[in-house]
Length: 456
Image (tube, rainbow, N blue to C red):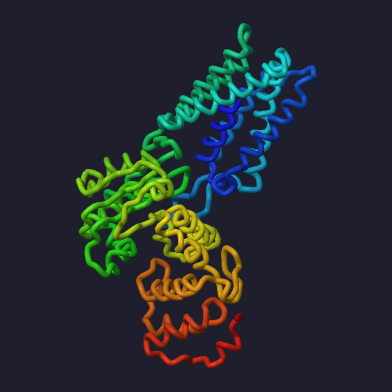
């Protein structure tokens, strides 16, 4: 039962992009279905024989109308893109009800079996079965097996559990599951990592577009192509005061684009941390600069946060990689993008909090998007309740971003940026910090009543 639940959570999420927002949707449907199945297990009509056909129906529905980002337009970004398939208000209820029905039918069969045992024995079997289901699916995911393997396991269990006289509808449904998921698993350019359904599409310019779970994720291209298309990736090295960095740490190294840029900028050692082994494999085989073959590169297949918590090493530069689809967005920040951006301070806070030498910086990073008048995020802090370091960082970051090239807006002059920052003194920014910034650049304040308008 838990194997099916985990398989549903992972497989539906790989084909329905809405489930990226509602990650617990299938889990809640499973809980509801399991509860219903156990409650009605004493009824005369068993539901378990219909679990396989119901599961086959759900697979047919999702494969017929998958919800993915539309690739037909010229805009190679996820954020703000128009999904394919049925609208969310129709897709999600159908999936929720189908999952609940499937799990109710399976739970009905489990409950009818448990009544044949003493309560403690049934509970023991429940625990053992759950552990086996979780361990089996985890092992298959770790090995990067495609859904056809999951279909063999689930379909085989349905047939075995219906012996010695399996119904034709169960056998046919099991075969249909294997056939449908086999067709998906063997599709060209498609592979499965422990976390994603990965689609690798070759482009006409020799690059490759990498999509994960129906969302554009990364672009594999040469360093020269990246510099011409997205110079923002080179900005950290251009602003580095000490010239070429000695040791660079890249969290989320992916297919190696950021690693290649670090090497091209003279890094003496690059620690590349990537949690997904499939993305690393794609980078090693397809990246034209072959950064992962360089002896200066040390690859760590692990979670970035766990790596930072364990490591006592010091680095000249630490880069947190972002999706290419976010940095290359020429249309600015829409509502979807803003939701992603607003999570960055919380992620940075969580990472720094676990690193003893940097833990004092965590509150500053968390509060960097707070506004002086209390309208910011994530905590809605106001005035001097915002850490001073965060108030300074907020002003410095905005000035830095506005005076350098951006994908979605023109680069502004220093004076233009200062005037815009000054206009937000007392609302978005601490007036005292703005005043110090203007004084540093020798610009006279245009407003004399900041102190009256500020929240102190």
